[in-house]
Length: 87
Figure 1 (tube, helix red, strand yellow):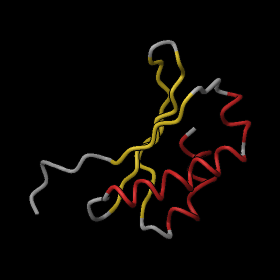
Figure 2 (figure 1 turned 120 degrees about the vertical axis):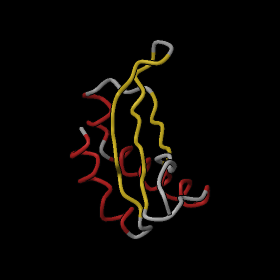
Figure 3 (figure 1 turned 60 degrees about the vertical axis):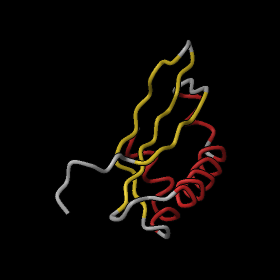
């Protein structure tokens, strides 16, 4: 799944210097949620997450088979937690 999502969105989110670090599907309150975790060299601010989310959602919506094949009800896009690293 990660490879499929990454292949679909990589070119566009690379422009934001953002990458996908993880993709998984989890059942939450009876719904199948597609979780997409974003990563970046620097801290990802809210504006960048919003911009990346918009791009990813538009591309996933166009490629309906990803959602249908996996019976996805929701897509959740968030940034990878930074922490515990010595800078």
